[in-house]
Image 1 (cartoon, rainbow, N blue to C red):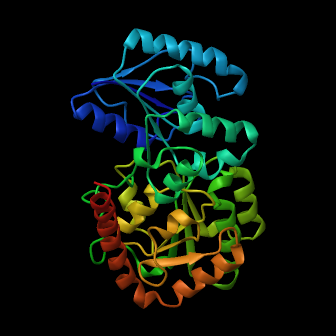
Image 2: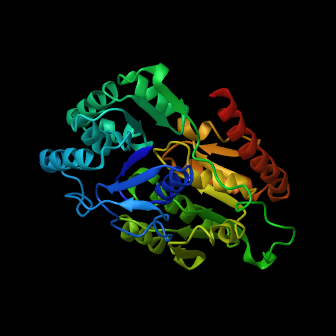
Image 3: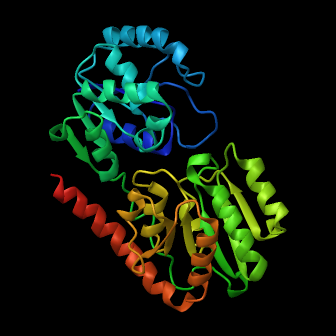
Length: 354
């Protein structure tokens, strides 16, 4: 088949989709709507994938650009003559694909489009309904986003849910002794982007509360984002910045080593589908402490493979961190449950939806 893969930019998820489609013997044309405002994937676009130059791919999406982008995307479909368009997020790439008049269209939710963007105003809600009602098929990585899509007009019989998944050979449990030194203290780990929807500022406030009372706690923060200045101010103002390691952007190749440095993975996200970083942490055998949003509850079971805290509540997060620190001897067993949960839930979901 000849497929146009239309996405916001080029992330780890895009790399994996492009490679899987290309390795499946399909002819792939990769169209970017915005391009990357910051580097989030160090690997080159997979071999044999055709990168398309068009009117988009350079600037952030603006509604005023929609007519021109739609007109040029329609030109691409006539030139490439694909058999299928794979497009998402819904209100941007999906909408442009639908407006082009081409069929069939596989619309893919990225989680935030249905859990956050749809609530930005009537234009976003209208774009969501318009796109989903005209999509040939729909896919997402979590039941909560599938249910949202159906509520906004997608035919439930034309949907499929599958988690992004992780490479269980690459992301695996740390070997006994694994290079950690006891003197390093209790290490928290978070690699969510420093953007409002991911709640890293909530974690920063919680860490201040914990570190003021415990001098044996440390925090690893990877990545970056628009909240960088405010997050550092929280840590500096709390007098705990010296206990934080800022690792920057880490390649997929090196990521397991960073998970293995930690005792507890934390995701304070306000919005998510099936989080890949959460699945990576589970696969690495890390106990996980995550916000109690619906998508996280599909993966983390309280007191089995981790814990939940009230979304946005820094005080409750701090309490849960301290509770985990006070039962450090139980964490290896929780970690083993994390690894088996990642494997069994992923396989189980695939089998249920075949």
